[in-house]
Length: 108
Length: 120
Image (cartoon, rainbow over all chains, first blue to last red; front, side):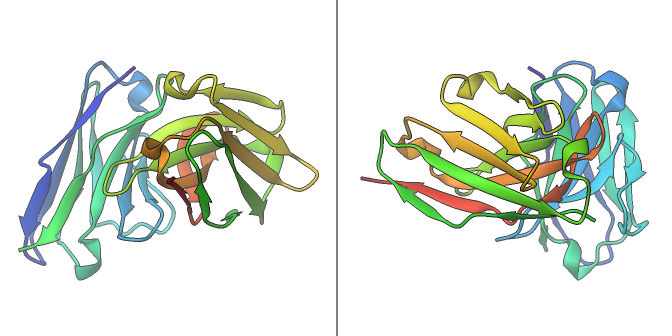
């Protein structure tokens, strides 16, 4: 089973700042099959990115994904008030599909 | 865009079973696998298993093998997840989620979640 480790656990930033979230896999993720989700309290997760760097439908271009192999990054170029949430990575290259433990982006 | 609507909250006794349903609308039900993902209070996301409605084949995370059954009914566009021998640690919100592309199990559509509380 591939273990995904996200860092940092919490990111405290002001609106307008750049956020950089990391997701590290315990082994190489086949074909960079990695997705990112955003979750707000009381809501289901929302798909942001798949195949490591492809934005899902309707996701603004301030969100970008990069990386390959075992190291992946989600960047938010300029934080909007609605971006403060918890973010999860998920690999779907090797079953069982697994999620990271999440990074909380909070308002500083 | 496919919409997934789940059944309502449940309160169960330890040792009992729970069945959660997930009805799809707005797309072709059989073409994409449906997964079940759970989230314990204040915790992260955990994949439990999935089913291909077209082929009726289910796959389960090893952690839940023997306790979980996922089924799909093409006639009603509904997927079901049954978890047995419940314990307090199974208290969680259970989500169904549909893969974003065929054979690509990232999750583009999610149900609203069903809270299952296990308590004596």
